[in-house]
Length: 200
Image (cartoon, rainbow, N blue to C red):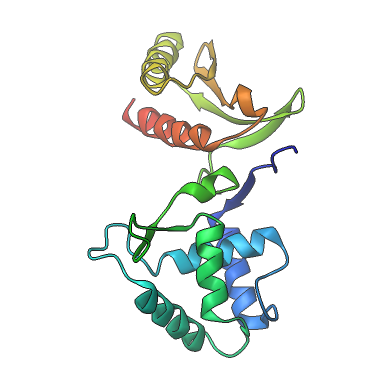
């Protein structure tokens, strides 16, 4: 069975879709559209802080979900138990080693990635999605120096881009060959590229 394609959701889309769900509802259970389901679960996962200690137990998490549902109005007719199960099944939360407490998880990033990379575009090259950014530089030497810094970061992460150095510009392309498209590392490295470009 082929792996499902990675779903990319930008932050503005996530906010507007969540607002629409809260305004219009989606019936019992979970939203039918994958994007809407991921947006809802990402919002719910924020009910558990990244470094929350002690981690909430099942009753505490259920109470938080019930309060969230009540606060956002009666348009959502789903229940807290369904949401709690989905948060685990879809990889937004995980149970601790004893199975009694919940903490945030990033396992969902195999299926969906929430991105905030306005300077990047997604291009399809030979059937593979690639993140692409063209960085303007003062001259060839500046473009080459930036390519060296990005290359060093790529080597440290063991994830390598395509770099095209030209006079006054550097084109960076990230994608995961093994996946035949985009994976979580590509977005992490695009964010790192942005930081390196800002420091140049």
